[in-house]
Image 1 (tube, rainbow, N blue to C red):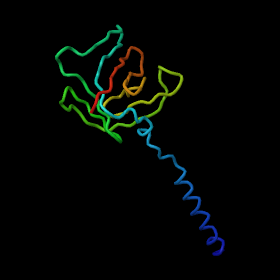
Image 2 (image 1 turned 180 degrees about the vertical axis):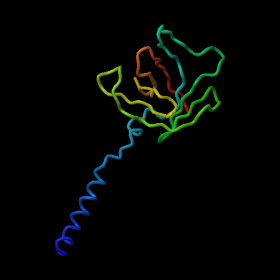
Image 3 (image 1 turned 60 degrees about the horizontal axis):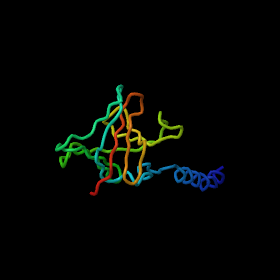
Image 4 (image 1 turned 45 degrees about the vertical axis):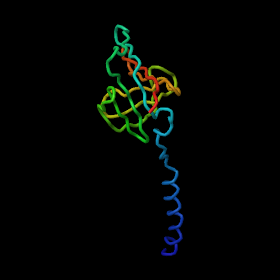
Length: 141
């Protein structure tokens, strides 16, 4: 009996190592490298009336800054308004048959969907009808 238990130890140890090394620990925040950087707000549109809001002349503009690995900063002009952690989660949305990434930062019960992300354009949207979408353009750091 003692010999059987001793011969099972290497097998059990191997199984434990296999289980821990096969777990997916991929940080989804690393899957969208274009997200990181500074983004200036260009416009918001939507709502029940479909209105469009743009920055007013000579007023400070909202800026989002995504900092690796998991921080988002909000500015009005040069003034830091908030700094918080965020994570990305891929989920179903009303905008596409494919899953989209959502920004989850703990400040809203409605995470923003990343509707469009290119080198110079970021579109965030509420994932419900009559919600708003926000358009940002990349700016130099």
